[in-house]
Image (tube, rainbow, N blue to C red):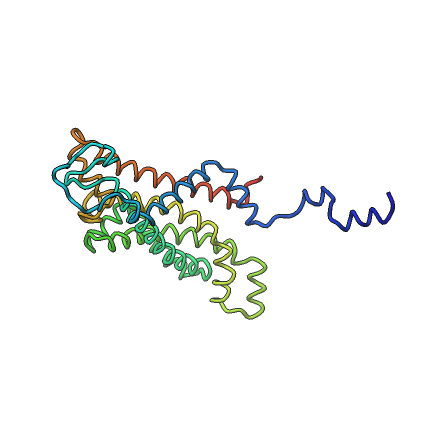
Length: 302
């Protein structure tokens, strides 16, 4: 082969070994690992379906979820009412569709409260250390001494049963977990070379925290947030089941499960269907969170 042909082939980048070993960015590697995880993909599609259903509930619900019809109370599933009706003749399918909005809102808003407070406290404790770190962590230890559900129940009992108070309670009981995870991640990155370089160049603590520390310690927070959404939905359903969350006639799945327990022998669909909805939504977020954890783990190999 002539010298010009070799030069042309090298310049065109047609070498198969060069294409095979083209470096990929960390995001591309993470996406590749995530796509290879079948359970994670199933969880992702389930979450997408729940979100789409929640957004379109107003248009796809066949009936008004609050409309009562005593003539068809406790009707078994049929073509006109695929999931049957409840004790007031309300269409259960419509209430399930609208209930997805409430469950997702409680889970997402509650976790957002936890993320904001927990990451702020954990970052301050991990970055500055010393007595401030000890004070914040001892307060978090006090909160962690209580079981999460009982702590949320106590907060709702003090504030009163309502949707807003339910989200506040769920947000507060997850703060210690986020603060500890955030503190550990910040401690692992605060002494890195790029942090020292930024400090040597005169960057303020606030600039270093928001530009370097938090972005490089956010991966475990993303994973934990996904998993805690599932916990928040389950906790909210439990509190509503006890009458401390959403109040009738709100179509919340936990409250629907609670009212349906009186008719388990004669009309089991009244409580079974909301229970299945809770189970599948919690399962979806758990599978998604597990997949994100495996994809973001730097020790994982392709």
